[in-house]
Image (spheres, rainbow, N blue to C red):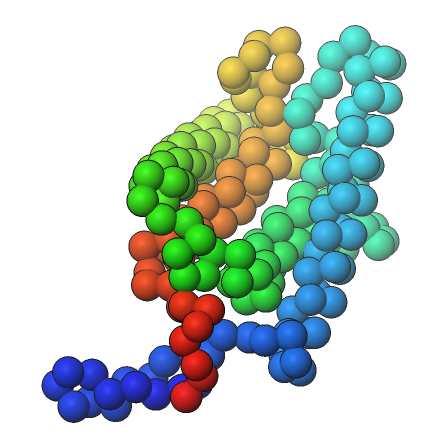
Length: 202
């Protein structure tokens, strides 16, 4: 952390931007590569198992197959958990090592305004989806308990938006929660003052 003096004479802590020569830069870079590998592997696996389910049954529940798959061994983390982890951590790594892409005046005016509105829109939509899926998930669990039959939580689904292709509720909640975290953080970064590339480190 660096410091700068405010107009009131206070010494205020200022965040230090990572450079390629910093040791921390490589840490974030390597973790991003790991997260990227996890995301790509999960995508390939998800497409494969969904296609198999579609071929065998003529239908599929979005996200159910990958949510009920555990890696690296049984009763460990589910694939959806790996996706949630890798997307959020990977995004944070991107913001730490890729700040030069948006530094200074690279994105200003109309483009910045549209970007901020888009990110705000994504945040609102993702928040709605998280609340919707989580509420439906809890309602189905409660209904099952009242009837005396505790449901298999990991296989609960909702026939929305397409009745022929329902969504696994736990999968949907995790995915949209990751989307909400990322889009909200991106919106927060977009309204913060950005460092100029010509500004020297103090």
